[in-house]
Image (cartoon, rainbow, N blue to C red; front, side, top):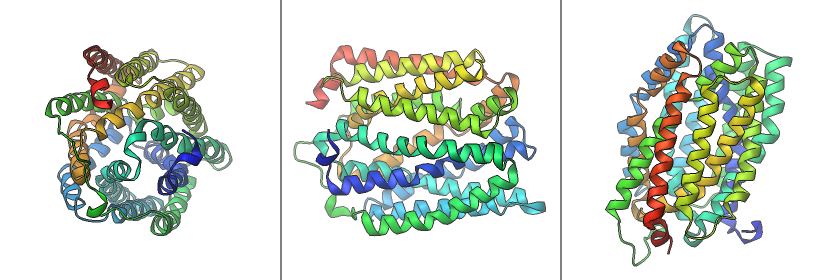
Length: 393
């Protein structure tokens, strides 16, 4: 699919994600900030778990409300909350620092309560007959943005101005930048209210397939959340004795591999989506296996890139299948319910991941390896039954 063939509103939405992509470095800096100011990997996991608890019921509640409200307002709320959270991180200093950090993390977690609105918005704004093709572009542009900006920011924060004080300034800058992204949403993204969300005639809710989707969500959620960013940061910075710059290099290698993965996914024949998802899961399993073996930095960089290639390769087919199982007028509610389900499954995984990593730095990856294998086997079995072909037709 060429860029010129993508509708104007869909382009504007993709460019919004390209604009906010550099700010995702906060997801690396925040746990690293905690570790460099005295928190152990176990304590960071416990910290994240404590904040997780409040988010589950709120996610579904907000999803139901946005069945009636304009989803665009929810996207604005996400950026406002993230901006407030980052400013609180930046102001966390002295005796009140723990309180400010916990308050900031709680506010940021409240913004994730609204994240299902991204998927609901995409389901409506992207052409239904082009989901698989358009998600290749949806993934590609933000990865290009990260590929350009992460090495620069990582080098500055890793070697030029290293340490927690510089991280606080970065938090403040990204918090203030949310004013720009809010203005972009308000000016360039179209509203999506009730009248824009009408399920096409002939839609049938497939309860059996939806249960399969939930089973996969469980395996995938546990596989990723048991080896989260904090495990990588702990291994690279505190075991291999590198800096945030090397962590961003891994992110950049992953972005480059993801961009390649978007082109590879476009070459998968129609009706072969489940085979593609199964193959991607096996690639993810390979990444987890190698990381479980405590590789040197260069190999960790390479295998993370391989893993992200696999994730990007299968993602468009999974998202397309998901969207075809959900009625549009209930999109925000369904996606919020799925997100609450994920949050419930991952409620204690940061603490478990921290506990596993405290026993051995790469032990969490061994658990993820088994879960990815199960997920891959599930989709190869579904492919043999021909379910994706019937859904896609």
